[in-house]
Image (cartoon, rainbow, N blue to C red; front, side, top):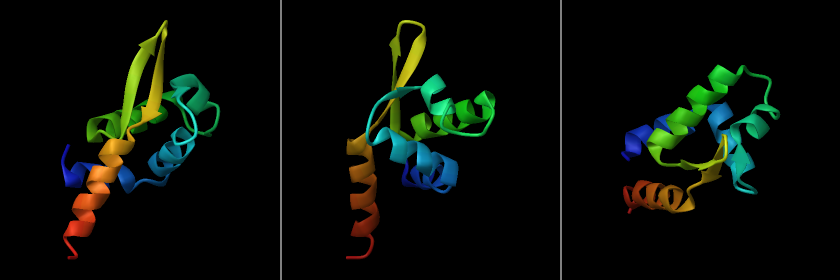
Amino acid sequence: MSLSSTFKALSDPTRREILHILKDTDLSAGDLADRFEITFPTLSHHLSILKESGLVSARKQGQQQIYSLNLSVLEEVLTSYFDHFK
């Protein structure tokens, strides 16, 4: 995880909305797709970027991938970012 990849992930409003949704509950890709008016491949691309940045993790549950917010990475990134202003 790098600070630049995390900020790239956070730069997109759809990805920020995904993070906002996942702060309340873990969801499958299908459940997330129901909340957006985008194609499933586009959602999958957004989830991939969030996973690569470490902001989201996924676990297999039967046939589904369940996505959850990785708060420790988000806290680490924000701490690192604000340390630049000390």
